[in-house]
Length: 332
Image (cartoon, rainbow, N blue to C red; front, side):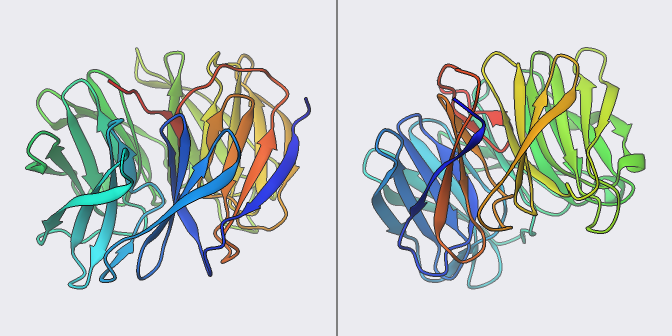
């Protein structure tokens, strides 16, 4: 099996821009930004569309990572008609919206990621400068952390049993570590030499963050950070033309990472020596915002109004793993 585009699926959703995507191991869910929000449900086994859900017409999906799951429900961040954050809770079993949490004090931004905390049964949503802790049992706001102006523009989240990690999407960027116990910032790494950060994942005791040099500048960086020492191991500088590393996944053996560039590339990186080894181009230049890995395939939703999803083969047989935007989703 080669590293190549296998096929494209037309979801039939007009003008769809799939900013968010997630998997429950059986189905893929692609969220189209728009008014109203539409979600395509895709069978992994058949690579066919099996459902479509339209959310309240007074809402718009707002972020490239504003979706997470606890295995029973999907949680999707939207902007309501009052320009405030509304989190929609969707039952996976019935593929229907069952509740909405309206947070009138908070306004989301373009990059406002979300993540599930299986240890403490919380989900975290974000705004430009705040992290919102949501209690799953009551589906209410537990507390909010203002990360400060130096850490503003939160663009990506990662988590383990002790800490929440985020990168910010500004020139003087940082990787910031937040204690889950105290819900306070405990440390940070200055990454401003590599421009803003827009994506994150972890595997094998390492965190990986993708950066976003502008088109016309040198290629993006993928930063490798050691979790135990919380220090920068190394940075992989990609060739010119490979910009905005918006998303990616890592196989279950931590052998290869697949990272998307917003100009339509999927870049394959061998993690053992942190070397770029291959690249494929997709049919359009707008498949960079999301990627899911299931079994031997990668899935990417377009954000060019086409409503299509690309299925790509990998050259490494790997066990099925549930991943979204670089990170594994751990189900209880």
